[in-house]
Length: 429
Ligand SMILES: *Cc1c(COP(=O)(O)O)cnc(C)c1O
Ligand SMILES: [Zn+2]
View 1 (cartoon, rainbow, N blue to C red):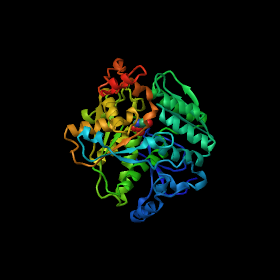
View 2 (tube, protein in one colour; view 1 turned 180 degrees about the horizontal axis):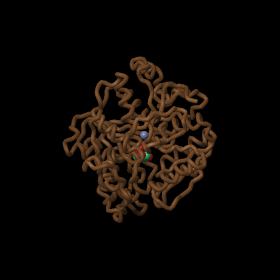
View 3 (cartoon, rainbow, N blue to C red; view 1 turned 180 degrees about the vertical axis):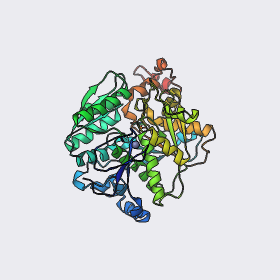
View 4 (tube, helix red, strand yellow; view 1 turned 90 degrees about the vertical axis):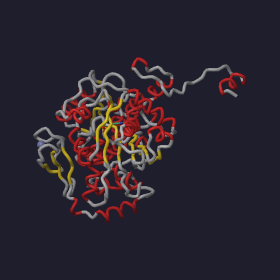
């Protein structure tokens, strides 16, 4: 198995387990972290090694995840399943930054991953762990992007994939990918939280390897978003990371990465983590603002289907990251999400609805004076603009009224007869 000093540790009670033990939960019900003995590693040497790998043309370490393999997963090369994921761009926000009132806003575009979302960073690590455990079949519950990613990584590595999707709307781009990559797709009558609970039973009973973000190796891979962003900033940490929150794996991962870099002495200052939830799927926001114990949201609703999750499995890890970093949790309305999306798209950058919680949340926190106008802020764009064309067209045709969303910044298509005169009129010249 995995030869390393790493081990699994429960985030709730601290109990430890061998890294080679196949489990996703502690006996107490808490979820697990992968821990490693960082005192054996030298931060300066690691940084030098990662700099040397930057721009490699091919091979495992040309991946934007495996470049940092010392902090990802100890696996022999022949077990690593990679699509050279990561290596995504970091964009200045341009006109979207002006709109948010932030002069130093950047976007890390994780929609530029091989299957169009950050899920590929977790999946390369999770699929490699599946190989280490000799899995033949992998499964996940998904609002869309996890299934698209898992089906692809299973296909490239010769594993079978089983996908549980909730009833109702799953964005077309995502469903299309899952089917195209050959995932066995089971649509259940129930929401994401029901699918999540079912897939855990299925994996236990049928001996299938579970690749949701409850899998601690997924989280390890997603840490590379933080590593790569900091490397792109020459290891000068921003003041804030603003991250959309659904199942809360990504904010957990990015926070864990910061903690590890801090322990290794690579990080001079600690960026604050702001987790942004949709107001209709906001269990972490409720806890944070009302100082109440964790409680799931019963019937989560949002147009941002990637974060339409009422009972996020990683809430403890995410809360730990927010607290450790001195950050915050914010919520945004449907209208705020879609208006932010219109501004992000019109800035020429573009992302799917859930991703735009980054911009909507950054603006809201700037308006409230929590983020100062000149602070350096990195928003995470979690998924590609093409994942959910229905949401885009609906907004720009102002047809989302039934969801209570107006096309505030709609760019409507104009229908004209095929004459020069009509074009003149349309262009006003
Ligand atoms: C999965 C996903 C999220 C939510 O991330 P979590 O780790 O579940 O909090 C947000 N946006 C997109 C596009 C996603 O695919
Ligand atoms: Zn425990």
